[in-house]
Length: 324
Ligand code: ADP
Image (cartoon, rainbow, N blue to C red; front, side, top):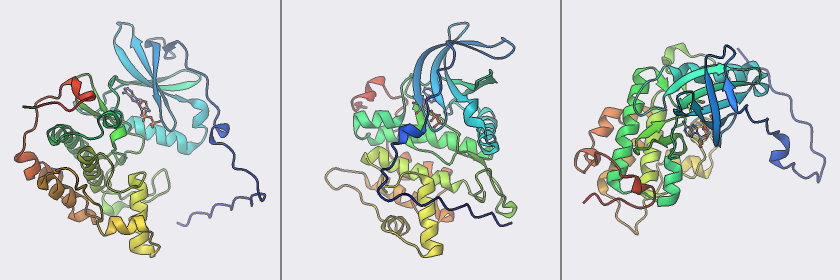
């Protein structure tokens, strides 16, 4: 089936200045101070603002017993198209099906006349991205601790047919005990066999295999120990697009060539163990089928021949812990 070509945008008037981005986005009104479902069975009081993402705002709320939770709010006015609704329903269906100590726990989903609400386990300590900004980079024992938890969550997802597709430091939240909690299932998809290629809700063919998450695990490991990402590309999707363009359409650019040729560098001014460098190079193989499995990753010398701390002190938010 051929999709209709989208109409070309009208030509811009010469010299017309680009509109500032925030002008095109109207800020929706805050949700009520007391959030309830239609039956009144559920009741939460809004106590603070946690952050906002592509299409949701996230608040801290308290339930009637005083327990603190995060509440993701999506305004119904942003759900006018069938595509937007399908995308949200997919996120809810996938996220609520997962229960693992290293995945943000999904609690309730309900609506009132203006919004759809999702209550989630509260991660009050921000994301690994926030922590990296303060710390600049992590020690290799810390990297092992966070990676073991991330890989455990990822293995659980994959055995439940879920690919996250957007694993990055900003989506790895921390609980009060410094445990990793994978969040934001907005791009997650169910694993499909290559035989049953289907159109997804976004119109792209959906035969992306779990190896897409393995690639992200390699990028995350590099970023934790080096302090910056290996390829200066915004997200996995962009990287894949570039690799595909390079391999199939002969429309290469410098960034896609670097990924294909596995060209990234480790800084030389400080010691980065040869074990972690070897593991990263094994994971960041552009050909998905050549990447190690999650089991092979945790069996690598980086994990088996170096200390994995049993916990990380909260002081690690600001300074490298001394594991003695
Ligand atoms: P979107 O799907 O729209 O990108 P996210 O799920 O990424 O939204 O959430 C947006 C922001 O809200 C995050 O960057 C984070 O700051 C905050 N946030 C999301 N979930 C939680 C949570 N469970 N606990 C604490 N803060 C959260």
